[in-house]
Image 1 (spheres, rainbow over the protein chains, first blue to last red):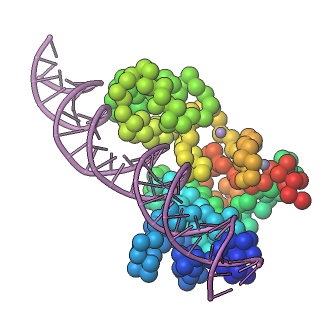
Image 2: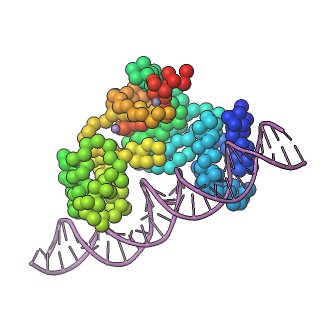
Image 3: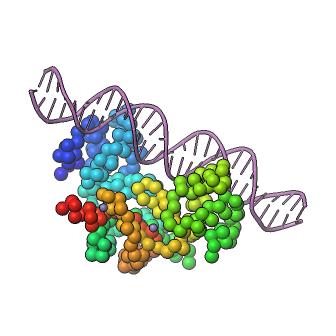
Length: 138
Length: 138
DNA sequence: ATCGTAATTGCAACCAGTTGCTATTATATA
DNA sequence: TATATAATAGCAACTGGTTGCAATTACGAT
Ligand SMILES: [Mn+2]
Ligand SMILES: [Mn+2]
Ligand SMILES: [Zn+2]
Ligand SMILES: [Zn+2]
């Protein structure tokens, strides 16, 4: 189901600003930052305010349309239909590598059984040392 | 080994500002925010600047003396000797519950074997639905 | 004890993101 | 199509955190 449809079903209004934001997210399937989106919008809808952008992104997250993740004190967003995956982020060189979405399934089970907690584990940024940097530091 | 000793060994200077910050972290074994620290310092060393506080916290993290974690776009810090543990944070009610530090050991092994990646998993904030909120939503 | 120097501080300007408020607007209804 | 109203947008002020820079200071060497 499209993002606009979901928003309408939840009783939210479809404004030109929201249409553009949703359009950008659909056309641009990778990770995006609010800043990226803001500079796109400056060309298509000059005058649009950043608070509108941030509020729309939060609305889309809350509605399950986008996934919001934080890394290093900043946020990134991606279309939820892209599927869940995780990232291995090297603390030394900064390089990022994708990894399988099932990685945490056993941890999820443990948490459900032991604490009754239903963990999200949607798009986790795992920091550590990549193999290249580990070799160098030995 | 004490935080001051570690800093000295790394060739950093011990300033009155750093001494106070280290003292506070030692006396205050739980999670702390930069703001908390700043208001403590206002009483003990009026005039100390927030940039000094943030830079010192980063220095301590880099030196392995404190662990820095982010949750919801903010940072919290704690003395590294406190031991590693993780938190289950409910996305609905916001409640937090501690959980065992070994939780991720199997994931760590998988990442080491499959990707050669040495994951940190030091103080992870796991978001999800707590058992109380899960029952309510059914 | 004094000196030289690199490290550190405070400052001010900045950045990403948030919030309360008022004016505007999408949409449901008549 | 016109109206009523709740939702939304823009604005401006704010928050937590960061950065470049010039002045100060810790500390090793003399
Ligand atoms: Mn991703
Ligand atoms: Mn903790
Ligand atoms: Zn690396
Ligand atoms: Zn809860």
